[in-house]
Length: 157
Image 1 (cartoon, helix red, strand yellow):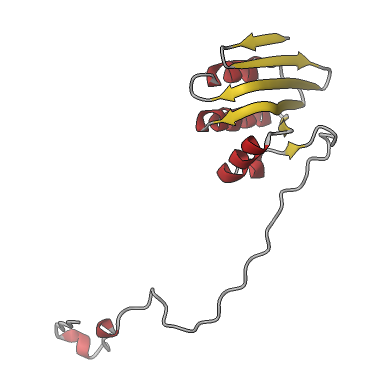
Image 2: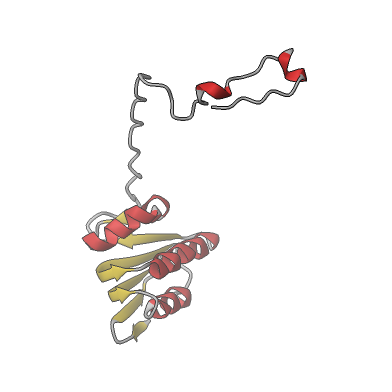
């Protein structure tokens, strides 16, 4: 399908029978996200849209928003967006923003038909109560019984 280039970023798109592969290289930030967004929106509808992030050095919030919007668009068309081989920096951004829970992130050697299940951390056990809860009201603000509530009561600490 072609290549779109900016000064710090380029995108190459290739179309196959069942998928579209988008390879992004460079920095995805507010200045370059338009190139990525254009490539994602111009991609023809297929069952899988793979975005190869192995060449991306930086992924800003603008890039995360573009990927999330592309995910919604592809899903509305009955397809799936898959992020492939993010660099460690990009993988961290995907984890911190939670996008890795919404969009499958896979290694290139792993088939797209079997995206990894999101890891579910086991809940941490609750600590045993040892001290009064910081949410408990102070002793001077205890509950007033209903019989005494008929008269105004002022309690000072």
